[in-house]
Figure 1 (cartoon, rainbow, N blue to C red):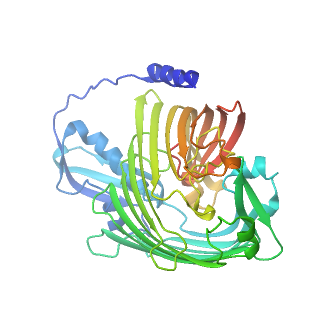
Figure 2: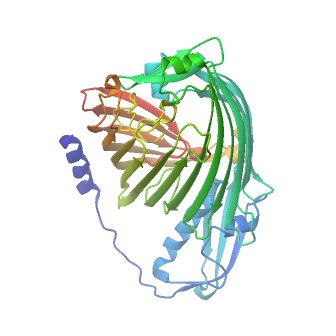
Figure 3: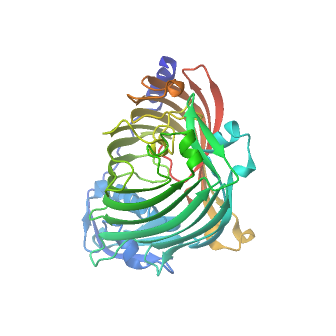
Length: 469
């Protein structure tokens, strides 16, 4: 592990440099006009809502270029456009004109659902023998930017490993000041195979010809975003579960109850302060989150708990195409006796230690810190021209980064199964090298070769649309 951190430190010294400031013109810019071009469907106010540049505003000369770039990134981060450019006509700085040129995405996406049911591609590839029966398939429809107001409706019907039918509708602004938003969602899912337990920090599944588990759910979420960077979110989530009695016999801690039909209702509050330059693949800025989750709101809920998690990520542009990033996260749980179905903490989603990708750490509380150092190798714009009839897919960027990283984590649980305690209540260290490919529609392809303290090393693959690390 010391070697890994020394490598990161060495790269930092090699990458760090200062750029000279050759700005000698002291005249400030007065913005006389802003013209939006290319937003055939998107309403003007959706774009202007993301800008802090407006007609009649004076911008100091020394920060003008930075202000242009920040506003470009904010518009791009709406997820509505393939490309965003801001050109400046500053023939007269006392009457500067800005032209915001956007290329809209393809907003209607009828899609064929084909996705892995496992928690990651690597889990499916290495642990589940590339079993195609562990695939979800079906039809879906996503309609972005309804009425040109950045509203989204999603419909999904799928079979395979998990049978599911679901729908959601998101409205980012429901008031005149454009600060309040709301989202509704509803769905039903069922499985003939369930995640039953863990042993030696590996998942164990139970399979049957009968329905072993189903879930019916409804949620409503409201958001409040007064400033550009800070969002408050509150969500009520109502769930009804059924688990076959054979599941409860095989794992008495699955729900911590003998009832085959159970209920669980939660309230979650999220605070998000996001000042990343590009959300899908940040190279500058920071992201801070606070999450409070209250589980078991009603008297018949099978489980009660309170959890709080805090995370902070920083991204640094070191110059000469070098970038440094770090992320720290801590999750604390008031209850240590968490039903197995709800015990999905370290090893799920983006919360894992690299090098331990094939393991789950069933902790009630955890901590981790991640460090990344990247070097941009290639950046270019692909233009397919007339070979692509759809303008939204005709031109797209491709960037390739060399990535080195080192992670440190700790998962804690007071009451645990000894057969599943190898990675609990101890430090977890991993490190490695990788290649990241960032391309159209915020898709990031990652290839990493990771090492861990168990003496294991392996090649891992990821596909994501929101990668902080």
